[in-house]
Structure formats: C-alpha cells, structure tokens
Amino acid sequence: LLPELPPPKLPVLSELRLLVLETLSGSSKPANRKRPAEEQLGRYQDRYKERKRVKNESDFEITGNTHESEHVIAYSSLKGDQGPKRNSDKPAKNLENKAPAYYEAKDFHRQHIGTGNNPEGGKGKTRDGFKSSDEYWESQRNALEAGDTGTAVQLNQLGYAHNSDFQKDPQRTKKENQVADSSYNTMIENMDSVTYAANATENQTRHVTPKEKAEMYLARRTSTSGKYSTIEEEEEAKNKFGVNDEE
Image 1 (spheres, rainbow, N blue to C red):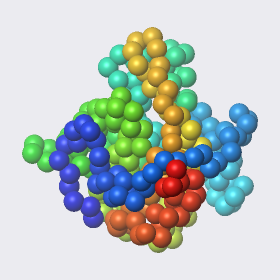
Image 2: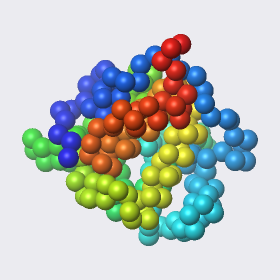
Image 3: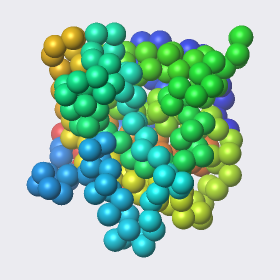
C-alpha cells in the first residue's frame, strides 16, 4: 500500500508521477494512428462503443452491475468554478461527452473519492490521499490549468492506489479487473487531447504528449500492484507510446 499523502499543492507531482519522471526524460513523438471519428474510443460519449469493443475482444458483457464509467478527470475539475453545471445545457453535455473515460469495476468506482461518495475523510484524516472530494477535484483542476494533464489523470489512479482492496488481485485474475485495465489502456491510447472550461463561455484544449501517455499507463500498473514500475515496464511504456530520449 502506498503511503498516505499530504494534500496536493501546485506544482502537483504525485508519488506515481515522481517515479515515472525519473525515467521518462527526453522529448517524444506520436506513436498511435488517429482513429476515424466513427472508431474513436476513450471518451465518455464512446462508452457504448467501448462496451461493444470489450464484448468483441473478450466475450465479456459490461453492465451496470459489473462496471461504471469512470471520468478519469472529474467533471467538477473540468468545469472549475465558472464552467456550466453538469447536464445543465448543451455546452455542459458536450464538455462531459468529450471527457476521457473508461469502465472501472463498479465496487471500486463507488469507493473512489472522486465520485463524491463519503466525501469527508474525517477530522484530521484523509481518504485516497485527500481530505475531501472537493480537494481532489481542485487538485485535478490545478493540474489542468498548469498544463499538466498527466498529473490530473495520475491523481485519479492515486485514489485507487490508496485502496488496499484494489490491490488484492495484483495478477488481475478476475475478469472484471482485466476488463477495467483494458478499458483504461484503451482510453490512454486514444487520449490525444483534453478539453476543459476556461471560463463561463470558453473552453481550453490541451494536447496530450506521448510522454504523458506513458506516465499515465504506468500509473495504472502502480495502482493495481502497489509497487513501483520496473525498468523493463518503463522501457515497454516508452516504446509503446513513442517516447524518444535522444530527441
């Protein structure tokens, strides 16, 4: 189990990201082809296509009893203080639909601080590394505004890393966990940009670099195992996403 963290401050560098940054140095180049719109995956609006992908590839049927859609960057973080209230109008729905999302196992998703359930860790205590859901959402928002999408996503995975039950299946033998890992990785592979509300009327879009993708990919491995990535895993991630140390 990873140690409990103090409330994150900017610049936000979670323990997951600190480890990755030691090895993923250098510039990067894109590695994945851009999918046609009809094939796009990894966004909230693509959730039904994601269910179909999982069914086709693993013969597992995602239902509301097995998984829930995880907004890896919470809508509260995307809208900030000035953006539209969730589901309030068309711009709000468009903002959520374009947000990165994957299917997480239902029980774990319901326990995550970002869902807003049991938001308070208790006086002087933290849960998932945060004292409240508000603090989690604010930390993600701060990372977005700092141009650090990688950290925003890693803060999400940090919430799972602090859940000891999440790591009771480190080999990922349960089908529900395998599906969640596959869905997360699919989201990362397709995450070329992230859009958030800059103010009440305008949005800001940030490009996601291959280096950030590699960091987020490794963050999942750390959250599921409770262990830092090996050199071999780090090299695999760099190769997978086209991170080039020599450029």
